[in-house]
Length: 598
Image 1 (tube, rainbow, N blue to C red):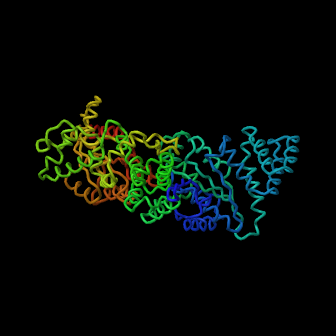
Image 2 (tube, rainbow, N blue to C red; image 1 turned 120 degrees about the vertical axis):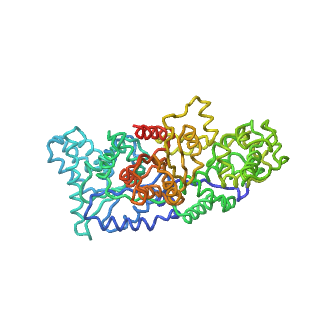
Image 3 (tube, one colour; image 1 turned 90 degrees about the horizontal axis):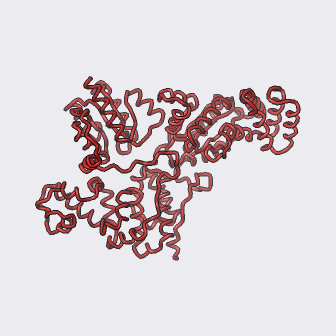
């Protein structure tokens, strides 16, 4: 194998844990957060949440922040991984981690404090505990925990013991500039089950809320919010937010990389994996756009290519650039990829491109060349294109085609495949790619929704399944604001079939024009507009203002779950959601219709 073929897998090591290059550019953020924590040491205890979605670099920021804080005078750090800390309770693991951050003399003072608490342990056990202090610190901490957790009364004294230990530790460094500070990093909290998440939160608030300690939590705050609702028995969203506000005093949301940062990130990953020569600018831009600039998703795509090539060297003959493009189809267009692996389809790529070209010509209203598309129509048992409607052709084609034909990135990707497409399909049907599961790292999350059928075919599919229209929705008027309307074409057509007047717009300006034409009974909205993550909420605040004065119901229909601050804004603006479930939207609209007709 030539050196150019020696591609390597990228690991998931965060910055500071084997990753030696700051591709995520977190160093400046870590420096700023360090300055904030050190300047605020007199106000400790407090908790800082580093908030981001899965794979967006929380651990990398935490490792760099720990390294920066550790270099500060009189600052000590402790690391606790809530997900991999073993089967012990989160309370036990967290408290032991904190105690192990002290030196032996502090622990001995804590032992004497425990010896004075007669209800915690008897004289014989007290002597045994003091004797244990001459052994390793880990054994002493284990013994201390065993004594503190004997019964409910003993557990009630844990905070007193810890306060004594912290007092001794702080006093020892009283002469240092600004006093001592212990920073406890809690990583991977959002990977845990709901009950474990709540247990960590309660440990922080009930037992470790003592002077001189700062907690830094790496978590997706929406996961914390769900856990509090599920495990703490707080069903009311507002009450769940209030509960978390008692735990987390300050939150830093890691932004998605800018387009320039994302390009540097992709280039860095490609260089590390030795695959840079296979990814041109158009492919890199597609990865950035379709991955949501998520570093872990970008790594997984590159690793999928490396794995597939090492498992099946026959791709050398078909072209490694073609393998890259098929991997991208598998990750970003899974429905079409599944069609490619179906032996019933002989040359799906050529068929789709022929359909796309005919669709473009037909929609532009010009003459069509019957000879060019005769084979496409004949293969579906249809008349020549002069006498055939586009709808008739689309009824015979896979349901995904109309939406894919409107996706310029997809069409460009398909056209860029080199060589005969029949040969590539033969390869995939003989030996499909290794199974790709995008959410394998987050087993606690629900399975992703299958891509919905779109357009008229979606309505027909519902009819074939025996699903009736919703007569209760008839004559309801809704305004739907979404910068990617094709993503919701199926549901929009279904609502129209049920008698709803659906006015689809792509942003604030067009929505204002729609408001001036007709006052909607309800508004559906997404969150994002291009690179603006929360434009949907800002738009709603504008529509609620004096210029539009819309006071009706609003539902956010989006797969994104916003952070706590944005959830509070949603409630303040009297909106519902978010949801990514089509049936939830329909049921919500039925309630709107019922209220309108009451």
